[in-house]
Length: 377
Ligand code: F6P
Image 1: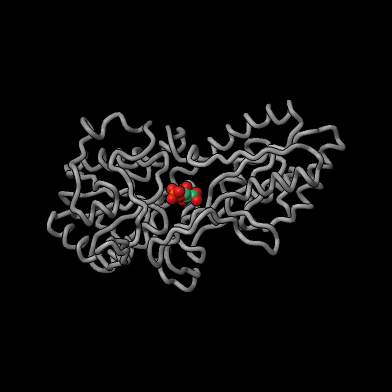
Image 2 (image 1 turned 60 degrees about the horizontal axis):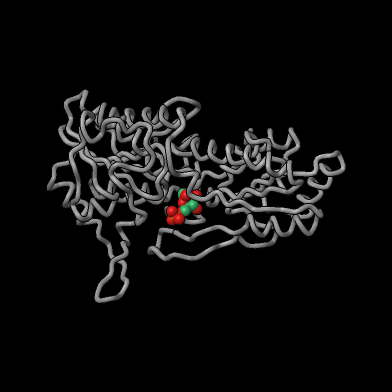
């Protein structure tokens, strides 16, 4: 093992740089040269990369948000969006990736990304590229791992937002709605609601009845609490209703880049009518992804990076680094994003993907119910 390359793909999270640093340092300790591919799969296609060095360009980055090697949201190199003669067409460009990696003699490519990124990684592995995935996303929805890097920071940001909404909501006797990200999974909403003292958490996994939510708020009013905190996941939907979509962005088959958002405003409006309290919505948005990672994310990212390099040294490819019951481990990418029918996997980054969503027996759901957080059902 002489040369390895790192590729960061998909929406950014706090912790990208800490993973990169973990890989670079471990590689250097074993005399392996490390390269950073610029802007994810785009850089792999364009053969655009830089050498990384923990004393120069990869130094002092553990606390920095974003990614020093950029990231691209176009994850599917097998159906890649390109402009040709003023027309948008989709092409299988995987062969170019394979050729570039071969030509540059990269012994392994680390793919830092969510399920869309890992789906391409798995397919490139099946065509002969040595890949090792690292599970990234604030949504915490990658299968086969307890946690993805970036998630803890997003929860912390949402929790701080709730603390701030708490005081203003209490002062003005309002229902304060906080819309958080998470796509088709309610992890951020549920965990931040518990951490931030939320009264209601609406998550995609439990379609809500707005009257039940209003009942909870009215019960609080009767008990003297003339304000409430309602956390709404962007993917939450009413019973029998639809998910709220801002726009549908077509990035080719196999990758769902539909922009969710807007449910918080709808919930606030309905609650104002049903409870008699004023209601205000705050959509937290990209605050959840930017800026400095929490200590937890720095450590998790470093562990994932070092583990990924360790796996490369062992020649263990086609896998994803994971955390299982608190222990670092690895699982086959096939199990994470493949067509493994026993775990119900479909293709990457779609509604039907093998996403890890909140289950009703999860401790977070049980805890929320035990302490009286309404889940809208
Ligand atoms: O998957 C991470 C995420 O931040 C989601 O929570 C959100 O729905 C989406 O990305 C936003 O994507 P974009 O950066 O394309 O607007």
